[in-house]
Image 1 (spheres, one colour):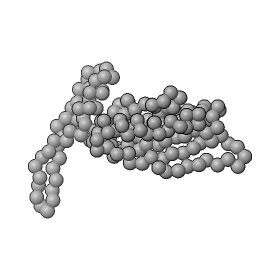
Image 2: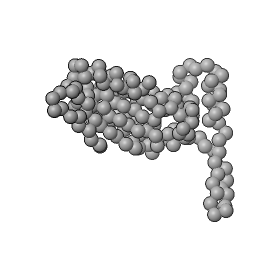
Image 3: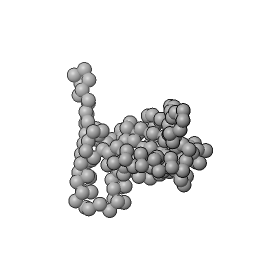
Image 4: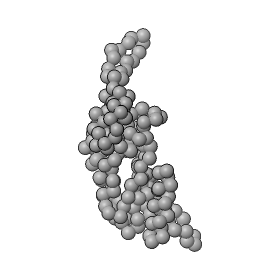
Length: 171
């Protein structure tokens, strides 16, 4: 559904804009640092039914880990952070956790799915792309100091014209 929203946003903007900038952010590694307590706090704000919230508390509670190395077994350590990628709860947990990641500038928008966020910037707001990236970095440092953006792709999407070719690059 997110890709449909992304494409719909881009197509609609291309009716009035000569091109659109789409910044793709991959936060898959960031989920190794999500504190369960932070996620649960955000879930409380959504006013979900108590049974579902309690199930999620139980899902994230009482997990531990130990390591075997050279026939030595470490002591158990509680796991209080990390969303398991590939779990059924993972994509929804990302959308809840990243819920306050919204566009910094009116006219720009965001689209989120699984561990990806897309920032959509019309040509008329091109000068604001640095503000959008600065907000993402500031938000990441405030929430999880060790979080880093794994990958940022930027693409210019243009209306079809004679000899017009999209320009894509990597930051």
